[in-house]
Amino acid sequence: MKKVMLVAVMALGSMTVFAQEEVQAVAAEATETAVEATEEVATEAVEESVEVTEEVAVEATEEAVEATEEVAVEATEEAVEATEEVAVEATEEVAEAQDDFAEVAIEELPEAITTALEAAHPGATISKAYMNEASQYKLEVAKEDGSAVELYADAEGNWIEM
Image (spheres, rainbow, N blue to C red):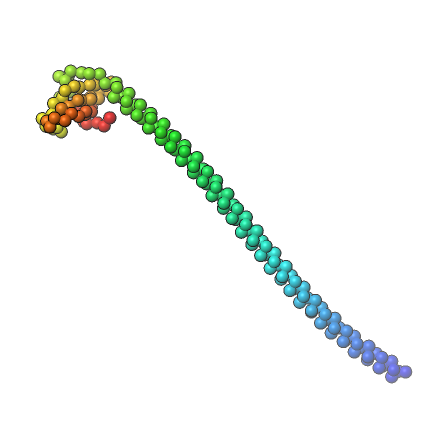
């Protein structure tokens, strides 16, 4: 009986070793399958995340472009309106400044103006002269070639644009 027991124990030991090897093989296969499944799920999740990120980025870019265009249009319209207002005001100011001239006798013109006229337009004659509150002079001048011009000068004989 001892022999039978010994054979049984040895057989049981062999089966245990065999069972352990089987368990290890099954565990290794299960681990490998789990790793592959995890890699697949992770890859799919990354791909989906990239797609969603691209969609969100495209939408955000489109919205930013639209908002920028709207702001640019509004800014341009405001700039045009402001420019038009400034131009109208400037035109009105120039018209007012030109209209504020009162006629003066040619003999009352400062000598600096007559000297500047002789230097800039030899042979020209002043037909009428006007002065405003800022001591600026408007001169109606007949040039030697027969053409008529309107010139503006300050009291020191410096030509000015009006």
